[in-house]
Length: 118
Image (cartoon, rainbow, N blue to C red; front, side, top):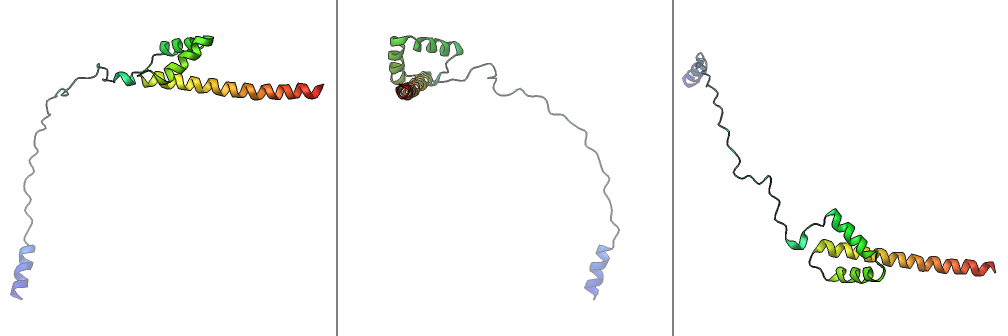
């Protein structure tokens, strides 16, 4: 019982609060970032260089030339090292193929429609 009384007496001692001392606020000095690449363009390999709007316009006008355009579409679909030019030429080639297939289907439908009239 004595040990219980001693423990209770220890816990019943008045709590002594330490005086609070506020530390003065010290602002850290401003430090510039370690690098300044804001105005530099990223290094893109020539294989992935983007095509400008004028480049797309020029390729579209080139592809519209009747025979030379089709030859250039085929050449640019497989030859250039720039992936963007290659993909643009391939998409234009697919557009021409789809248009050609639709024209053939409509041609046969028109011929059969005219044939049934007479």
